[in-house]
Image 1 (cartoon, rainbow, N blue to C red):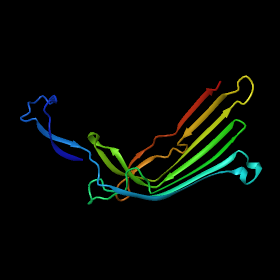
Image 2 (cartoon, one colour; image 1 turned 90 degrees about the vertical axis):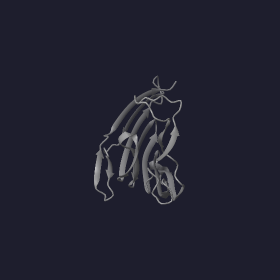
Image 3 (cartoon, helix red, strand yellow; image 1 turned 30 degrees about the vertical axis):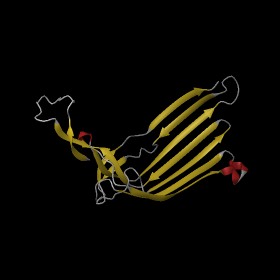
Image 4 (cartoon, rainbow, N blue to C red; image 1 turned 60 degrees about the vertical axis):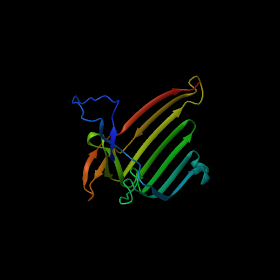
Length: 192
């Protein structure tokens, strides 16, 4: 954030107190002085019928990233990781899709990261967010024939294990715990 003198001529004064001068202080965020992001990402998706025909319809997807970020939000004297970016993120998805059925379980694990949150007075604050593992589930069925052909049923469960969000202080002690719970969604669609 930066404070600069600003000419408020032409703007209404809502303070109720007459201003001695139209020049006042104006605070706003500003862009930092650059930075770098380097890393590697690996991903693969494997239909398991490549191993044996018995596993037709089953598959797995895997991804892993290791990213190092250094940004200078307040100039050369302050270097920190990019807010919201974990150093390591891994995902594993197992699925089945065949004969109108679909099932998918996905797990994402991310290492701790710097979180940019809204603080008092809507100011941005930086906090340490703890590592987390979130698992989601999706089940679906589409009727393939007959008068109801095209009717789809879908059930989604997000955050199956009720993984909380945790903020930490600089020593790694928990300062905040938010439990968002799991979210269950059910849907029915029909394709003509």
